Image: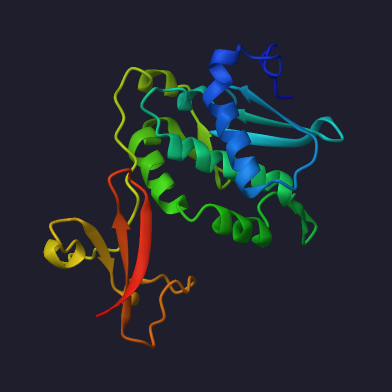
Length: 220
């Protein structure tokens, strides 16, 4: 029988959950506003990087817990937000029986996560690059080992979104002395039709001084 630490589900100090709680509420408002009731956010040194327990508190009271390995000041907020999206997806798309076996991540789960979290590959690249010494696979699940406490004393790298540069020359990728980012239509992922490969246009992404993005089509 698994033993949980006595205060696992007791209210955690507000300062410990502030970043996680804010991320969950922001991602819920942006992508999962249909979830009814309340969502409690806790810190729990148990098992995975995070887990969700829908309707754990009461029929409309859900629980999302984050592992304390994420409570590092250098953990990128993008990573926290994506993990929040993943756990919210567990509430929106609950598991079901498949072939007589309960599956917590059915196909519709992954389809929903891909819609709300297209940054998942970049996030997992950061997780494996910075937290791999304390992660292990158990029955196709990622678990955090006790070595996580050693990582809390180490620095962590920045979050880097993945872009399909593929060795292209810098003056072609970022013409105009880096004032704009030019992504040819042929680089568009096959599942996303943000560019039409049948025409001769490419999308140009402009970043202003405030970091806001805009785009337009330009002829290649």
